View: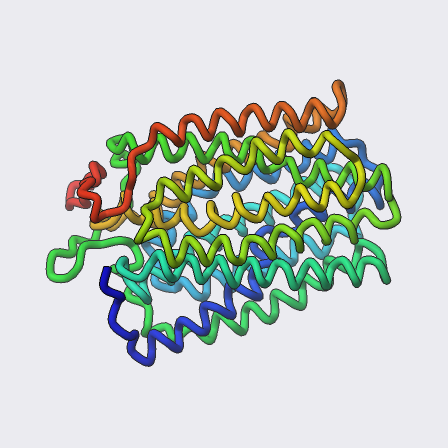
Length: 419
């Protein structure tokens, strides 16, 4: 396969700016993530079921916003400004937590954070596609995820070290500092380097037919529906695993819970870097499906291994496997969605719709796991999640390859004036 021609200077400048965006935004885009469970358990003494309910409320809010966020990215040209506003909202919703304690207020702030956070994935994917085009998109997404995971690893090291010195609350201030850096990085992306028609997956000029995003076309592609179902099961199994590990660490080592959780995140993120690089360099050569199956297979293995020991060293070692699955999945999903939606002008709303479906799994995961822990313990919760992950892998095996040059034509309808 011939490599793409060298990028012009404005594109190369935008590439470097995107690297910085992904690096600094890494700790901001998911809000507090697993630190929320640690903070509520260690500082406010909440029970696991209440923690799971707050995280489920946030997940459901994100679920409702995913598809509209994708549609927004298909329609607006002010993509950089949208990312900046979302980053400020996520951070503002989190840094107020030390001053509030009621369930309602905590749930409300995390819902706002979750809704704002839904903008990042489609916005960064759209900006990337708009800059490099479909031919280099797999490479760019692999690079995005590489810098994202590197940023997460650095932020987790800082969070663990600072939390050891100043307690869990310092995580909030670290997020605020990284937000300022990410805003500066977003503004470094040259606005003129973004082809906004290309960013929404429109056909190449002169065949472009810009039009508003349509949702009905999503139901016409069976492969897209299978991908969404696989992702939903994957996240139903995956989303609660790290928070459960953090809660176990809080019970066995309460003084070091935040630091140990940060170590788990660092371990996984360090593995995600080469996993994302692998997708960027090999997805166009090996195809998408082998990489997807490898990422999905790791998750049930993790779920079975966690209950074997409560030792921090064991939990940290098992968490390394998360880096393989999450690293592959994060870089590969936008590429596969781009394969299926290319030429329709509906890339971002399609990515948003798939994100909505797997967001349903992610939203239900903490609540499901919290209830199981409450009545049956952590081991049963991990094994239940492992069984769900195994089902996702079996369904992924039945999916066809989506790589364009395999000859599969997307059944997604191209945009028309009627839609």
